Length: 214
Image (cartoon, rainbow, N blue to C red; front, side):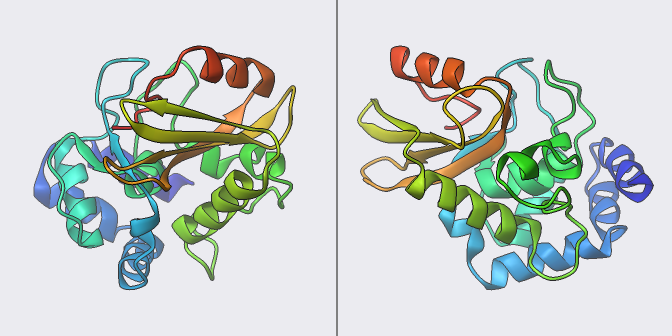
């Protein structure tokens, strides 16, 4: 964890050289980005902005945004990029406080994993084997496509879907949005929520793109 914090601190500097050094300082991260790119895993994810809707500010620097997309082999124009890349790896290197804490907490603390009925360390990014994006994508897809506890909405002609692991109380939430002119929602994000019932009610009553989806 100390290495991750050190890299995240370094990545706050809006410099291409520093952003590259921050990623290189975490060998498991550099390897994960390469592996995910080679296996086309980013294709399952939609588009997201790094401007957090709760604070109205970017959660990572532009230099880090560019470096992550360069390594992932994805063309992107700040501040909108690949949701999987940003919500998994970008959030790991964010030190920006939001009303819900640091973005990386979903991956490095056990709440989300346990809400998915997985081992507490299931989403630790430095585990050997499958990358964080691979593990998160598999869990998110499973929840989204098998959950009886879900909701759908159409926003400006785009299909959106939310799935949760419990009807009430603490749960894991998954959100997906279809690209323009497409019908199949692409993954946007997953995170733990304190009360799934409240989230589902609000989702149904106020159709809009949410959780930084674009």
